[in-house]
Length: 101
Image 1 (cartoon, rainbow, N blue to C red):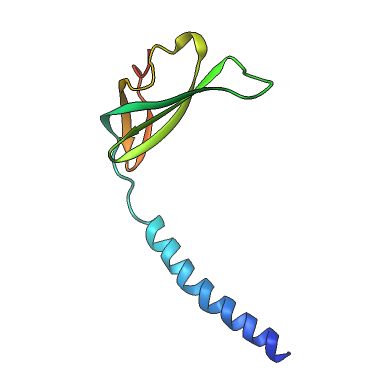
Image 2: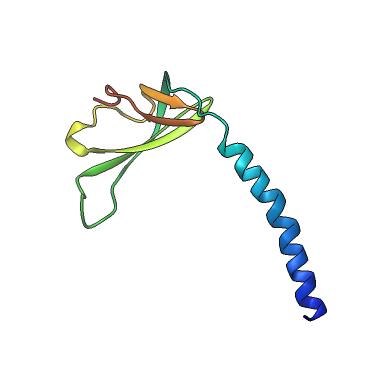
């Protein structure tokens, strides 16, 4: 083998081993339980696409996380700036049953 090839293989090995250890370490950590929280609606935008054009993207944010979900235009009952209930798991916010309805 050439000296350059040996160097590249060694470099890849030095990067891959610690990366795989880190991946397996964090994969084994338990997921935080979901809990109810309140978040502020920061944006509502139209779905930009040919199919399912009757949907709106709703972006929510609180002090500990962000989230985005889609709803039908006719079902959206919130405006930008409203406080809405969400489910929070870690830093991810997902829609609760009563969010924007």
